[in-house]
Length: 144
Image (tube, rainbow, N blue to C red; front, side):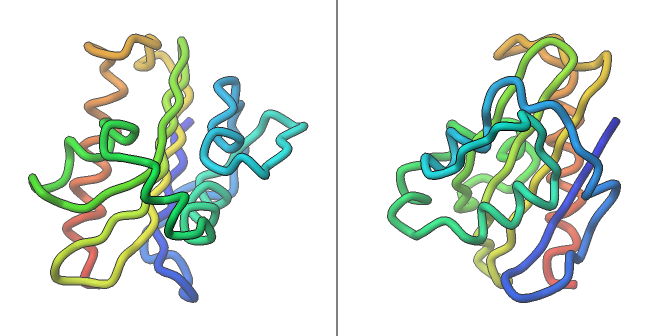
């Protein structure tokens, strides 16, 4: 299952596929992104993660670096400002970030993938390439 949500603050998503479909959050990505979150369901949606990224205060976003969003950052031009987080396990790869392009308003991007491509490894995970391709596609729509 693949879910995607790309949204700017105060707007409807400019790119969304299955964005409200719940996925397991076995790595507790929501709680790691926002320490105030008390995730009792262990479920996330791409829309929920994207809106969480938009709601985080600037000081909390600055603590999240591009290394925490390696899946999405790979699909964007070098030097793009990006802050967020990711979670991975066998058969699951999720990532959420606030992207600040130099030529368009900032947007949040969240991708939740559950399926056989995700092997749970930090490197060499085919799901990483999938998330990078999605990030590149959304980047091309950023001026929408």
